[in-house]
Length: 389
Ligand code: PXP
Image (tube, rainbow, N blue to C red; front, side):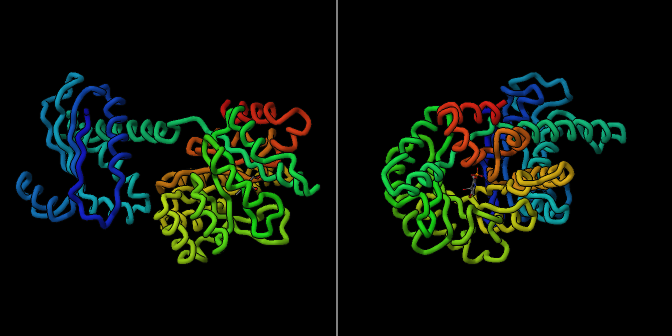
């Protein structure tokens, strides 16, 4: 294992060791040291102050210390590079001051520590400082690019409107369960259904059967009402997406007002988390809502693309797309997993799918509308081709 990683920091600022290990391994690969070894230790300020006093005669804490095992810059791959120690408390303080996510600050300190282990030293001379900074910047950009696009954008299909058609006749076809199977065979990464309070399309028994039959991932879209929460806790879908729900609306309109109901939503997230169900919050592309979603412990946000999709002229569409793109980046930077959806169709999907940090799109109406003409299998495959192009 090229990266040995350990945390002795107090739990006040939660860090994700698995993610940090992956960043460190990526950085080793980027610097041509994929087989080299390093050790990474996270501590709190008192331990860092002690290290700084013992090794550098400075009686105060600091953000990062490197202890190189090699000399110079001509280090062969496979060498033991040394140790990096990072104070999580100082990193968190700096992140707050710089208004950046803690994860971003920790990544930067990791880069700084590694570049030291590789023989750079900004304290040696002005020229050396410039060289080191350039190397750090280059590594930071490459790491960000790689971390954003670890995998291709996935496509989850919402089969609500198969049930809409069934309910229009009050008989038992078309069947959303059968439709879900066809979507999965065509390459969908997940099935989404919205169990509405008024049961206008999806019924309780659909969700129950889908829970048994969906092989990919069942995402239950729902309002945060006690009845539906009870059903979700009972059926345990693979994830839930909380949406605002109004009886009169034709489809979900705006995103959730997370910042205005943090306490209530945090309680739902805690309940779901106890049952092992990750929660996504469907929100408008607004920094305030994204920060609130991160603060209350959501795993995912689904960025509402409706205003982008519904824009009636070019300038407005561009403006709305920029908001979606900025929201996706901001949410990803806060450590959230990012999905997107609503109103996406065969004409407007590609740009959203191409956003680096978008993990999955949730699409319903456009695929079902096309399925009536060309068949569901083909409609899903065509959409998938656009999403993964
Ligand atoms: N995401 C959410 C949260 C939704 O409520 C909906 C609509 O049910 C969708 C995505 C899919 O939207 P559309 O049917 O317009 O593709």
